[in-house]
Image (cartoon, rainbow, N blue to C red; front, side):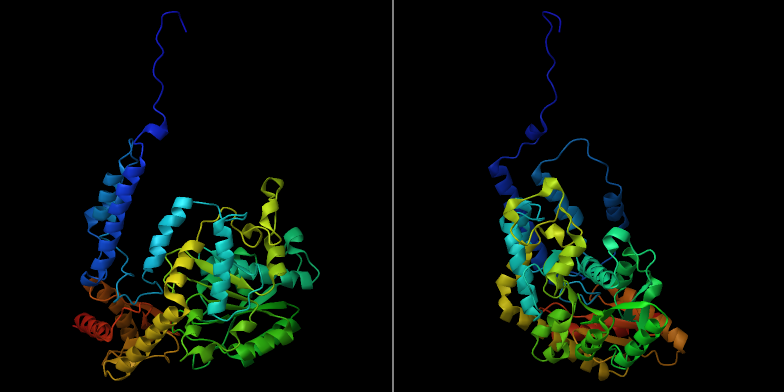
Amino acid sequence: MRRGSRARPGPTPASLEHAITTEDFRSAAHTAADLVSDHLAGLPARPVWQPMDEAARQALLDAPLPAEGRPLAALLDAIGTDVLPHPMGNGHPRFFGWVNSAPAPAGVLATLAASAMNPSTAGGDHADVHLERAVVRWIAELVDFPHPPGGGLLTSGASMATIVCLAAARNRAARLAGRDVREEGLAGMPPLVGYVTGETHSCVRKAAELLGLGSRHLRTVATGPDGRLDTADLRAAVERDRAAGLLPFLVVASAGTVGTGAVDAFEPIADLCEEQRLWLHVDGAYGAFGRLDPAIAHRYAGLERADSLALDPHKWLGVPVDCGCALVRDTEELRATFSLVPSYLRDESAGSLGWFSEYGTEQTRPFRALKVWATIAHRGRSGLARDITRCTVLARQLGELVRADDELELLAEVQTSIVAFRHRAPGLDTAARDALNRAVAPAVQRRGRVFVTGARLGDHEMLRACLLNAATTEDDLRLLLAEVKAAARELMS
C-alpha cells in the first residue's frame, strides 16, 4: 500500500448483516407461535384442501434467489401469506387420504427446541443420543416387540427403515451361505429370493432393487379372501425355489396393508420362517400401533417373533414428519451390516453400543427423538391407546355406514382404520364403474369439504378412507359418504 493511501473498507461480516439480538429472536418466536397456533386452530373451519391459485403457485416456483437478506419479521409475514394458506390438508379432521396424520401439538413444539440444539445424532455423549435410545425402546414397548440394547434406530421413514432391515437380512443370508457380502458383493452367489404379497408396500421393492437383490427375485404370494398372506402358497413357493437352486431368505408380512389395512397372521408365518431359516420382516409402518387397541390387539399375535419391524411414528402417532423407526431383534447382525468407523470418528465417550451411524446408512442424523419423546410423553401410553381406539371405532362405524348404503359397496373387512369401498355405479359396466370410481376421489378433493383418495384392489378401482385423526366425528363420516355420492352423481350426469 502506498504511503498516504486509505484502505477501502472490507465487506461487512455476515454475522453483522441483519444481526439478530436475543430480543429480536424472542419477538419473532412469539410471532411464529401465534402464526402456527392460529393456523392449527383455524383448520376445521376451512376447506380441507383446494388447488392452489396459479399465481400463488408460480410465485413459489419462480421465486428468485434473494440478493439481500430479509429480517425475521418479513420472513414470517411471507410464511403466513404464501405458505400456510396452502396446506396438504392432513391437519384437518375430515382428511381421509393416504396415511398422513395431523401433527401432534407436543411434537410441533419439540421440533423447535430440537432445531435450536441442531446436533448430529450420529453418536457421542449428548442428550439427543441417549433420548433416541430411550424412545426407540418406548416404541418397541408400545407394540410389544423385543428390544435388546442397540436393536433399533430412528430413520427418515419406514422406507429407510425397510432398507436398514432388509440389508441386515441380506447380510445374514449371505453369511449363512459362506459369503461376506460387504467385502465380495453378491456376484457369483445364487439369487437371494424374498416373498411378498400383492398388497406389500412399494418401499420393499425399492429396497430390494437398491440392495442388489432385483425385483424379479421378489415372489408375489397369494392372499386369502381376508387379504392376509396364504402360508400354504408361501411354503410351496419356497420349496419350488429351493428345488431350483435359489436361496430363499426373506418373508415380508404386513401389520396393516396400505390398501385395506389387513394384518397378516404372524404365528404361522413365523413358524414357517423358523423352520426354513428365513428372515421375517414386518411392515408395520402404519398399522403396527393398532396393537394398542384392545379390540384388535389379537390380530397382532406373533408380531414379536419377527426378526425386524419397520414403523412410522409420523403416521398413527402423529409425530411431525419425518420420523420412522427400524427395530431388529439381533443387534449384532444389524451392527455388522453397517458399522464403519474411520479414525476421525473415534469417540471414547460412545460406550459399548457405539454410534447410531454403525446401525444404519446415515452419518449426520437430525434430532428426531425429541418430537417422538414429546408426543409420547404428552399423551402417555393410555392416551395414545385411546386415540388409536377412537380411530378404529370410527373406521368400523364408517364400514357399517357403507354397508347400509345402497349406492356404496364395502370391499374388505375393516381390520384396522382403513375402509375400502366403492360406488356401485348402477347401470354401468365394469370398465365404466372403474372409471367412475377412479374419477370420484379427485372430484371429492376439489369440492373441498372432505379429502379421500383412491387405489386399486385386485383388478378394480376403489376408494379408501384412512382414519388417523381422533378429532374426526361421526358427522364427518356421514359427510364423507355424502360427498362421494354427490361427486359420483355429477360425474355420471
